[in-house]
Image 1 (cartoon, helix red, strand yellow):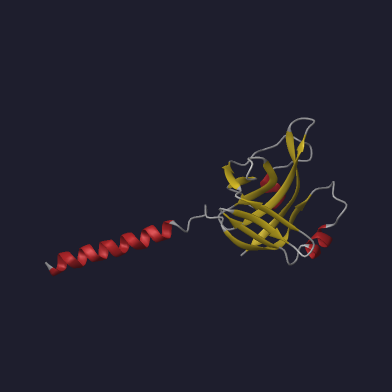
Image 2: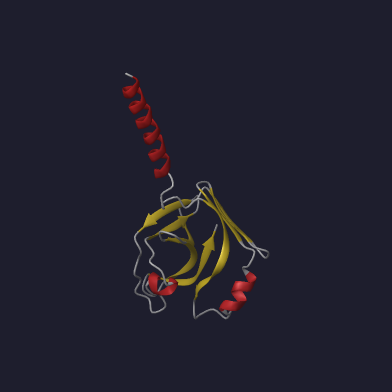
Length: 157
């Protein structure tokens, strides 16, 4: 009887432990991040990567279910009640759009397009790999309907 009770208790402990681990999967993008470095800057920019790295140095990113916020020394971007739509990586056809893995230099698993509380695209996107998170901005290329990636920044916790 004691042996059976011990096995049941161990099974329950194992079940609790395993269910706790499943909440820590790579889909959990929520948290507070800081700017690490510029991974990509469009050739259309008049800035250099070194200049942007310096300007973004103390920038903080808050990514929560109810808030997407970027705080830098010069500006704040805030979307309350954002919607993060998980998507497969899109290969755009614009001359100024490239394969995300080529731009970042890493294997990106998927992306989240961010929508504001009214359901409009916020022009911000998260790129997720098994061990990294990036944030990028893009504009619509109205000539052919594709998107032009303007910049991609690597974030760290």
